[in-house]
Each structure stands twice: as C-alpha cells, then as structure tokens.
Amino acid sequence: MACEYIFGIFACFLGFFLFYYNTRTKKTAAAAASTVVSARNGEVTEGTATDIIIVGAGVAGAALAYTLGKDGRRVRVIERDLNEPDRIVGELLQPGGYLKLIELGLEDCVDEIDAQRVFGYALFKDGKNTKLSYPLENFHSDVAGRSFHNGRFIQRMRHKAASLPK
Image (cartoon, rainbow, N blue to C red; front, side, top):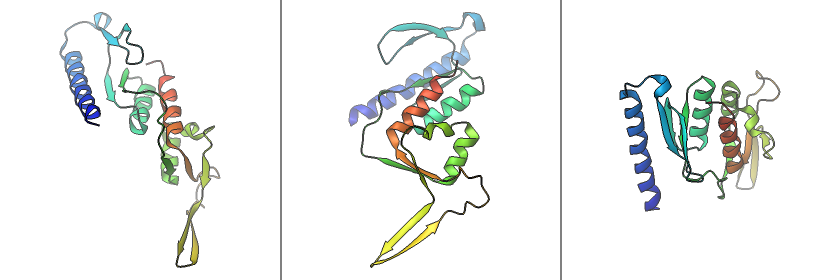
C-alpha cells in the first residue's frame, strides 16, 4: 500500500518536472522530441513533445485523455498497471452520467461489456417495497442508467483514448 503512495508521489513530481521542462525549453517544435520510457515493456522510444500529462488512467484519466486528444492536444498518460482492474466492484452510472458520456463521445464504452440498462430503484424495508423510476420522459429512448463491471468499462475507455493519433 505504501508503495502505491510512493509511486504516486514520484509520478506527480515526474509529471510536474516534464511539464515545467516542456514549457521552459527554447527549442523549436521540430527539435522538441522527448525521450519516453514505456511503463509496459521498459523500452526507450522517441516521441514528440507532450502538451498534457495525466497521471492515472482510471475513469477520469481515460475520459480526460480522450477529450483532450480529440481536441488535438498531445497527451501522455502515466499509469502503473494497464491490465483490466480485477476487484469486486460494480458500477452504477446514473442517466446524467450516461448523458455526459454521450456529450464526450464515449457512449460506446458501455457497449459489449455486459452493461445492464437501469431505469430506477427498488426500495425494500420491513417487508414493504416500492419502485422509483428515473424521470426519463424528456430524453431519447437510449437514455437510462447503466450498471456494469468497472474494470471492463475502464478498459474500453483506455482503448478509446489510445485510438486517437495524439
């Protein structure tokens, strides 16, 4: 556990240093090639300068990387483990969250991961129950909540972000 915190602190300092170095250098854009060590296999590769460094490729990091990359920014993501997270965690995305995915162009990330559409809640107490539906009347038919495996969703978002050229 302490190793994760140390790695996180190191990654933050590394990101800050790279950002500071890239903004202070006086090289031309053509000469501003950065050396990058791939976390996946340890190989050293030459790449172009980076506009944005994101530490962490979870839900927020992958969505931000995709959004900024789609905007034409050169994005570098630092993630300690790109394997599918395998923990006992589900995910419930409310309809407003699904609308945000649509807005960002990430709605297909809930496809083919066995996501279930959710239309509301069922409440149970003292042998009684009631159902509460989401107020979805003013939205198109695909809008609903989604319940899915968190790791599969994160992998789909990472692949979508990695599919962009920058």
